[in-house]
Length: 192
Image (spheres, rainbow, N blue to C red):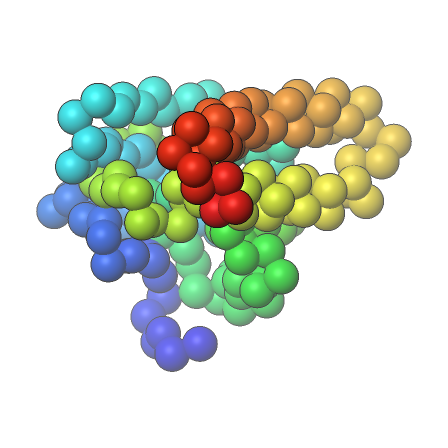
């Protein structure tokens, strides 16, 4: 709401933009002026045992691709056109925890997007970050996915992508949540 520029990048206090982030984004917009946002890739930092594979494939239908998998990841890798964010209504608090995914869906349903595949950010991994709260993430991502049902009705490829996306998100968050529960039982923190 406070921004006045043409483009917006969201930077959480625990992440880092690489020096090329803004120039790569602006160049991608110049090459693809019809897009609502451009996105790239990130690498982890402060977590030596983590690895990341960028799974974006060029697609004329990024909405369908997002149903299957949130290939974008954290908002730090996205440069949005501010006017588009305003038109779609910004982030919706009822999807907190996955409000970025909800935003990606709402934009990709209406506008083209472009992934340039450059590594433009570093995403910090630590125990206190919101994306490590697996119960919250599972609940929020399922609510975001269920909100897509209206838009996929009668479209077999979207329905298939939706079913695949539900399973992928359940595996992503549910398996870790299960093991967090097992560990909590062993340490006597089962109420947590």
